[in-house]
Image (cartoon, rainbow, N blue to C red; front, side):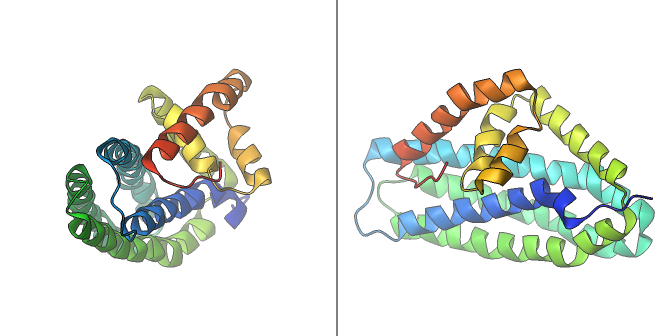
Length: 216
């Protein structure tokens, strides 16, 4: 069997980095003494809604596609995977709390910062467990073909839900140029052109309106 390598997991791990990036940006924004005007606060809510949709999809893929496959190959993983799935529900509540607090801006900035900090702490631990305890099992038990099928299923679902225009610029934001090019190469050539001329500029405008720094 042609075993996968850490490089094969680059897209999955990149999503983890992007969740951390988004929360870090929010925390930085909410530490500023000067509060954002109402229009910028609404733009911030819109950006956060995108992150939440992507996070929810990420968790659905884990719970319904990835984790059952891992358990089928390594029964001993069932306990930690069960804990991770249960934690997804706690994360859902915290992401909703962040959305509520952001919607209360301007004003109540301390409450918004606390909500973001609570989510950042739990999600950081959650992602670390996946990377330290689950990814080694995937590397040991999955072939390149196995993982390609997981990624293909994930991509098809993103397209079916209309999430690809949001996800792709989100994934490439801040990525090294060679990594960004590799991610874009995964989609159809026609879509790559739309990404460059429509999806990426729209994403950059949304972040700028919210006062969030972007390296896209």
